[in-house]
Amino acid sequence: MMGESLAVKSSQTAYLAPADCFLIKTTNPTTVAEDFMAKSDFATAPEKYINYEVLKNYHAFDITPLYKDGLVYYFLKFENAKEAAAFDLAYYNDADHAATRQQYLSLYVDDAELSIRESSTVEKITNGSILVWDTKGIRTIEPTTISNGLDDIYEDGYYAGLQSGWQDMYASYNISLTKDYERLTTEQKAATVFENLVDVDGLKKITGTSGAVEFEFTDGDGVRQVAYVTDNEGASALEVDASFLGGKNVPLIIATGDVKVTADYSGTILSGGQVTFGMPGSSSSTVSSDMQDAARVIQNAEYKKGSDTYILSQVLKNSQYYVGSIGKAYTGEDAVDVTKLVTYQNWSKE
Image 1 (cartoon, one colour):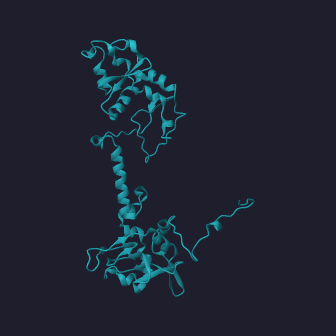
Image 2: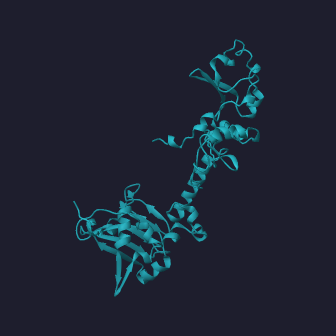
Image 3: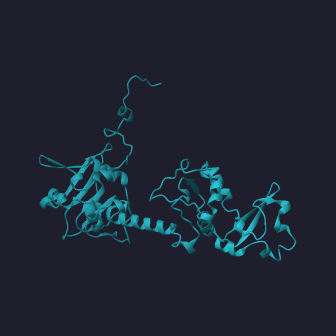
């Protein structure tokens, strides 16, 4: 349940000390009776038994024993996981040891049976211990990334990769309110968030000389839901105060110029200028978002001018993405009976 089924038994042999790490004739594992570490002079002269130069080449600094069921297993001892992975590359990719590693691996796994999805957005932290073999020989599953604490944050690439992804996400949010930077076009990357979200030409055609219009609908509770749209670039800031908000809910404000909020406000403000906050006699306004009502007003609000009816998709670029699957339960005429959305034939309900 914790993913153990992805483990490969051959990894148990991955860090057994190779034969050239020993200066005496022994096997690994060997019997407890043949354990050279139990000899009386081992503690004072381990260099008689262990080839420390070879250990250094394998990125290990010592050998440690494991005793079980009358046998002793000699394992390489590493400073950290990164050095263990370096050993994997130094030993298991060495042609001189190909026969040994193929013998181990062929007992348990081959590439035809093991498939790990390769993706630029998916990292596999394997410490270099996943190996497969096929007609091309033995190889490691790539990419392998190692996390060895803050000292190796850039050297091992894992956290550096995460950082790069977070930077792209942050940049994307700042210019499009979306998180996938790679999907943005060159034009979008060079534009402001307002330019990416608002069709300014479409907005100005609708507002005309009046400068401001209200897209609205009345919900099932009798509340006017309003998206306020104004072309005030180069003019005075739109002031969102108690009188502006009175008698209606305004979950969306779109202004080509500045906006000044001097009342508590819940909603989304898209401004081509600056948005400032501050209530009379107070240091600031209380502002919060309401994604559900903003999505709902985008989906339902209309502005009527004579015989013409306008909707917010004529002001917002890709407005369908802002609505998404956001929903809210309502009573009244706008309530939806979901049982009527599904039809079936030749079946009966029990």
